Length: 328
Ligand code: NAP
Ligand code: G4F
Image 1 (cartoon, rainbow, N blue to C red):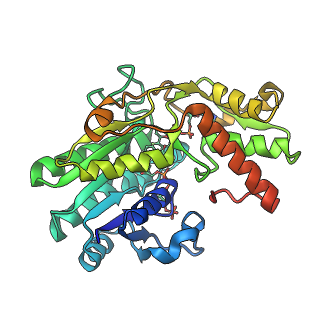
Image 2: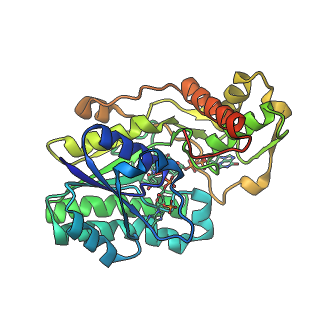
């Protein structure tokens, strides 16, 4: 039975990846950091089928011990401080988790078992102020946030360990991917949750920042499949994972409000509080390398994604009367 370690298993992607690997007969070890209140909402449904271990990206010894004790064949490093606005408020901590944390995991692998296949969760935020449209594996990086800068470090240290120590280390440059399990602070879920609340008469307005920003939004379960494919290939490499389509925040609002028969312009208010010190205006990826080499392609369209998220929020609110953000 293959064994995989997932850092960040309590996050959106970690929870979908764990389910994906369990369905393929993997033994799944999930690393969680110690918190005073346990938050396993996203993994509750299959928690009894995985092994939870305590560790932290800030603590090198905890990573070495976990690898020594559990001897995984694959390590998926999904843990990070992943919210861009927080990275402006806590730039040093973001660097510790999201940049140096990658080196700590890679070094633990190098020390304990260099045969482990390693996946690093890199991001389209690295392209930032884009130098090319669409963005591909060879597009130069120009990050626009401390988060983006930290991810560039994580990407290059992954390549460096591959080249220096011959590790099977892959970097997936994933464009935005969403689902009902997305954190409520990210714009897609913020919108669909507000749409559901407004539709049910629980709220009346939605305050957003930059409506003109454009993103290449895909469906998270499709994207964890791409992570796994990278580690099954016969040689390690880096891949863009995206849909190849871009839409603005404004369009996302239009489609989501339209779906429940509401006029978005009557409810959305632009609030400068949500503007960022520097913005990423346009992201659209070229996933052709992943298609050609890994035979990966997205299965959910933009319209379907919006509907999946609105439906999940409506159902959760109707069932509980109180939103349970991470279930679904
Ligand atoms: P997420 O929902 O924010 O989950 C992040 C996970 O990291 C959580 O499980 C969190 O644990 C854990 N974590 C944070 N700091 C940690 C630390 N010091 N030690 C151990 N665990 C820690 O993120 P996501 O959307 O699933 O994204 C997964 C990864 O892909 C992240 O690295 C993100 O930057 C990257 N990425 C995401 C996207 C996207 O569109 N979703 C696109 C490109 C790249 P707690 O539950 O304790 O907070
Ligand atoms: O949903 P967002 O916060 O995602 P962002 O910044 O693109 O980052 C996400 O995707 C990255 C991949 O490119 C990941 F690496 C990262 O970890 C994260 O998962 O914001 C999307 C856009 C931005 O341009 C933002 O300015 O939406 C705009 N926006 C407009 N109003 C808003 C809001 N974003 C948020 N979060 N909240 C708003 O009210």
